[in-house]
Image 1: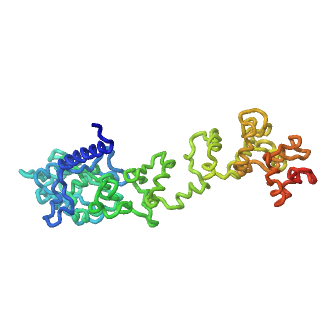
Image 2: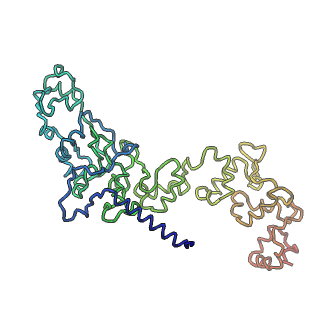
Image 3: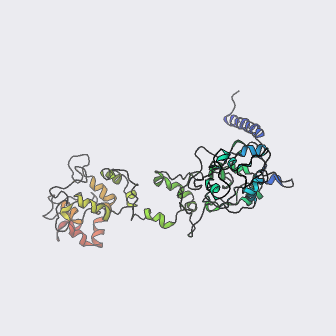
Length: 454
């Protein structure tokens, strides 16, 4: 028996939901802050299983995280395998409220396990190493070559450089929310010396700092705000600080698909229309108006040698061109310089072109204003009726009168009649003459029979 289409559709959906339920049951049940209500707090320093990756092949942004210098010999993996917790070395992480805080362990934290003695830089021990060269680079491997304790020894030890990231971050707030360390820094059980590679990327941050809808998260799990200044540094005018000492900050495209590639200047319209307040995180309205007011045009809007092919776009869609360019000034001025304009009707009848004064260049195709032959035969009539303002951007009234006038100086004997066949019978002739008879005298001599509208 043939099943109806609706029944087959419902059956397919039921099978799909069943598969999804089975797959969800196999996923690890990671605890959330809400699930912890009424239970003992979780161990922030114990790695989750499986850990959430914090690194990607692209690497962290060098603009957000400037290059570091860590001339140290250290293994996070060994310390974690021995049962050392993160807080035992990074004890300030639980109270830090600024990303500028240097959370590298001080010597006092290391001395709890390592019997460090400044008077014995090459000290040997049966337990954890205590020699300076065991952790610091720059010292000779041979203990006999070590300088005596003092300035000479200190000068050979390579110093760490840990520039502050250009971000706002509150470790204390995250630890109080029971967010485990490896949620942001990855599984350090597989890492020796943690570097910039173990710092969180924006894609990871957006797992919580999102609108709660794009990733299907509930309102209880999302961060308080998805605005950029929640993490990024703001200027006095409310926009983000994008020109940083380490480089220029540009969107990654992770949040709104706004990767500022070379083609984004032509593709930004949809992003700007969907959420203008998002663009306002970096751009003010005057910044947008630099392009959209048409006074200053970006050089990359048109491709190379565009002037030789701009005519096709201009004929296809003049309103697009008019959004930036003014026909009466920008277009006409260039056409006059190149002789692509009707100079005979200009005051003083100037030469066709300042560059090629001996000849004029053609803008319209052959037969544009002629009733005889050619693919473009008499097309100017349709264009003039559709949008006379486009014609007047290059032509004066005298251009039209050169053919349409019935006076003796008309190039067409008797004048080319621009009126439709029912001009007189429809009453339009009398209507125009009653409102302004002077316009009729542009083409007809006073006293002519045509002025009687009979």
